[in-house]
Length: 100
Image 1 (cartoon, rainbow, N blue to C red):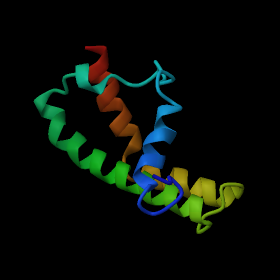
Image 2: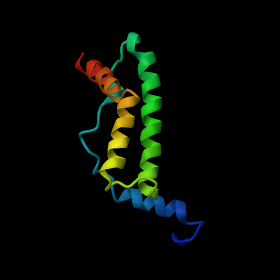
Image 3: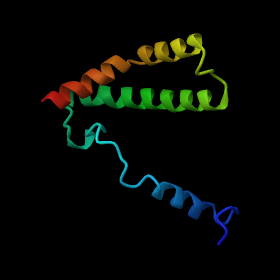
């Protein structure tokens, strides 16, 4: 199967991911081993949805040229947007849960 055709695209993607096998970072946050207290879980759920959607959208905008990653103004607007969504609180909840 020719991996450079539409029919072979899935195989091509699979083969491309194999190149990175075994090179995963050990620095990944172990969220699966962290228990978030019930008092914070609802807030974290909302923050997670908002922050992750914002990051995904902004990433696409930086990639497609809607935002310029070399522009201090665009980058500052991105960081300000994260702050406005409560990214600091998001990190605080995860850090408190991790510390416990």
